[in-house]
Each structure stands twice: as C-alpha cells, then as structure tokens.
Length: 216
Image 1 (spheres, helix red, strand yellow):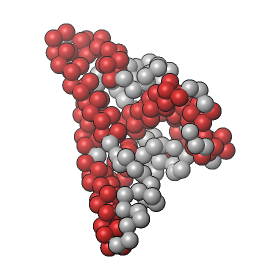
Image 2: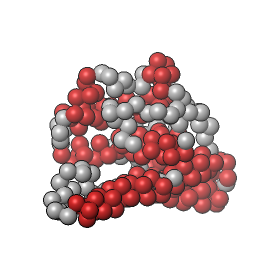
Image 3: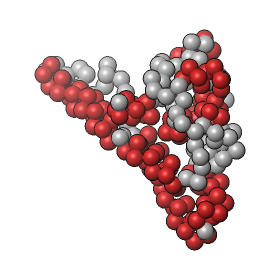
C-alpha cells in the first residue's frame, strides 16, 4: 500500500490512468507541482493548444481537490498564480497564521522548515531518467543480447526501483508538513466523490484525452 501511494504521488496524474487511492494533501501538492510545470512550459513555448489543454486539466484537478480538502482561501490556494508551486510565496501566505500561533520569533524557524520541505518535495518529483523510452535508449543496437539485457536492467529496471524506494521520502515530507502547518486540512477523498461533488475532471472526456495524446 505504501509503494502504491508513492507511485501515485510521483505519477503525472494525466488521462492514462485514474488515481487508484483516495486523494489527499500529498496528491494536492503533486498536482500543484504538475500545474506549475505546465505553466512554465506555456511561458517557454507559447500558448499552443496541447499545453493550454493540459494546463486546464491540471487546473481543474487542483481546483476540485482544493475545495474538497478545505484549502480554498489558504496559502495553498495558488492555482491562478504565474507559479502555482512556489515555496516562497506559499510560506509568505502562511506567515500571519504561523506568527499568531507561535509568536514572531519561533514563526521564523517554522517558515524555514516549511520552505525547505516544500522545495525538497519538488526536488524528489523532478528526479527521473533522462531517457524514458526503451526502444532506441541505452543498450539498443548492441549485438550482444546478454550485455544489452544487463544495460536495460541497470538503466531502466534498477533505477526505477531505486527511485521508487527513495521516493518514500515523499510520505515523510507530507506527514511532517501536515504537523507543521497551521491549517485544518480535510481527509483524503475518493475519486468518485471528487467527481460527483467537486467537479474533478473525467479522463474519459475526449477533450482531455486529446490534450495528452498530442505531441508538443
């Protein structure tokens, strides 16, 4: 179950597969990170249709989960900012509540800890292979089949397994964040309820499928 949760937190949350576990605060942070990625790509490449649709998908996902977890109006309600996942901006939004709860001096140390954890979470999500495709990747074309298999095993299989195990750190970060935050965050919500009550987008919609099938 723990590894399944880690896989979900690291997943792209796109239309290829529905999340299999209830979505909670960690999922919201991961979705906010994906929304931030799409916003950056739009700034870099311009407003091309696939990127606009993908950003709209992540915006709809974040908006639904934001409401479901009672995060609207908090420092994490940054969906429409130029940089939705900006630890400095999020911490600045938390500052008044932290000072009210811990006093102005202790609040500074909470801010440093929260900012560091949010940045480290993003670092873990950024980790991955530079080559994602097996065909044409490292080892392809080598005539020695045994050596080719070893290269694929080390470069793809073992790396992915090692990264997944390392990414358990996301669970520790999320638990610690929830303990440090001066917020009452709602419990994880099943996908079916997110869709029926909060408008979480449905990957069966042809518009969303098109967004992730088109090349950019």
